Amino acid sequence: MHARPTRLPTDTLPALVDGAIDRALAERRLVGAMVLVARGGDIIHRRAAGWADREARVPIRDDTIFRLASVSKPIVSAAAMVLAEQGRLPLDAPVRRWLPTFAPRLDDGTIADITVRHLLTHTAGLGYRFLESGDDGPYARAGVSDGMDDAGIGLDENLRRLASAPLLYPPGTGWCYSLAIDVLGGVIEQVCGATLGEAVRTLVTAPLGMADTGFTAADPSRLAVAYVNGDTGPHRLAEGEVVTPFDGAVGIRYSPRRALDAGAFPSGGAGMVGSAGDLLRLLEALRRGGGPILSERSVAAMGANHTGALELPNAPGCGFGLGFSVLVDPVKAGSPESPGTWRWGGAYGHSWFVDPARELSVVAFTNTMYEGMSGRFVGDLRDAVYQGLGPLSSKREA
Image (cartoon, rainbow, N blue to C red):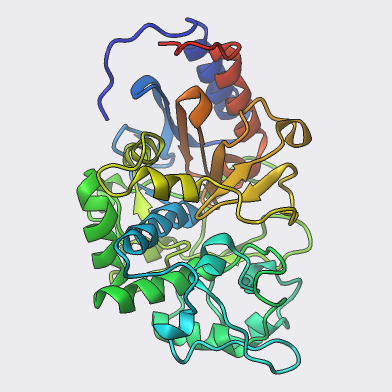
């Protein structure tokens, strides 16, 4: 996308957004951030602030590359939707059609049929190792990788280990954030007869001009250092450091150098790198109807709530679509966003949302976990954007 001169709904939006960023930096909740706000197809505010490498005094720039963690998920989900639209990946087909050895069982030993739709919506009965309460959980005992560590194994082996652990519930009957998109990555490889990186590039990133997005950083000099929030301010993330996103979870084991390792297996749910501008290209393509990669019908399916009344932990008022959460009840969520808003984030410190009713897309990439994913900054930025936009009018505000 290119910024074009446009009249803002209010001239206070840039000041409000910058205020949220500046407070987070001044209070040492963030080290660096790249924020983009697009309205009606125009970038109405952009801000690169803080440090990509604090110790080396390298600033965040427009083209800084970040470790994406779960921001990988909507990208890989979009690739799956391209294949579905081409008739090569029916959403309600069983995963064993492409991965015959991936046959996890319920507690009673019954093999359950997991579909592609179950994977996209995180209703497959799978989980994450980092969500277990200790090192003796079934995923830990099986040696399952969450896709962000230096596992030293391939994707096939990780899926074998994952399938050896019992399912948390029968597919389709519950919701749990999970390694489902890693499994989906394995399916995509089989459908395309190519590595996941090659498939995603062909189906999504190349057509959209997302040149900085992939499974390894092509230009390491532009890769932001990862930091972790602490009592005395953020510290540099160490190789192999375990950081828990919330109390009661054993936490994620991180390998910052994984982003430079072309031999690391491609984790569809957590393994990509990219720039804020690249993600905005994808979000805006979807918001505008999907071209050139998808049809409006496919985008509508992605943005619909596929989880019904199932509760998403820590996300009141939200359901889940095909690749990201969908706001169902803004009052219950305590959010100024419109019903139907898409949202998700990434553990390395990212958040993004798309409000189709407001023709609005916002990307906030930071290099500070977990403030940039689930800390005060996320709500402050959202509220600043909506305060700056003002009330929704019946006419396009441009």
